[in-house]
Length: 147
Image 1 (cartoon, rainbow, N blue to C red):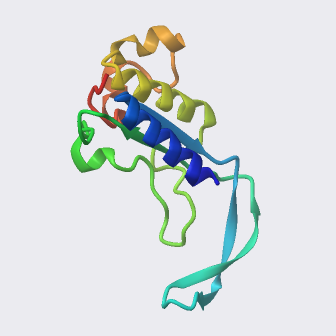
Image 2: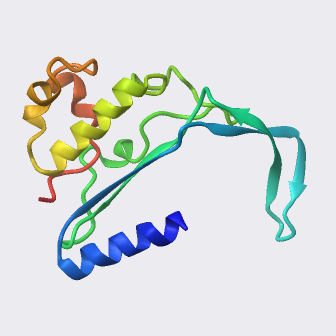
C-alpha cells in the first residue's frame, strides 16, 4: 500500500512537472534470528523475524526532479548516511544522527532546504541546530539544488 501511494505521488509530480521529496521513516524495527537462515523458495536467504525492536528505526529520502536525475552533492558518499554492522544492527556511532531522533529530523530539514538552494538558512530555520553550522553540515547534504 505505501509503495502504491509513493508511486502515485511520483507520478503526480512527473505529470505536474514539479520536483518532489519524499521522507519515509519507521517508528521502530524488528530484529531477526540470524541463527536460523531460511531459503525463501527463490534461492534468497532470509531470516525469520524474532522480536520487535523499539531502539532502532529506518529512514530514507526519495527525490524526484522533472529536470532529470538529481545530482549527489558529495558523490557516492551522499548515497547512504550512517551504516549497519556486519550482524545487521545499526552502527549508532556511524553518524551524528544514527542515534538521535532530533538530529535526524534536522538532517531532513537541512536536505529539504538544500534542494531549494537555501541550506545557508539552516541555522536560522532551526535556531541553533545540534548538527552545527554550515561547514559542519556540508558533508550531510545529499543532493544539489533541484528547485
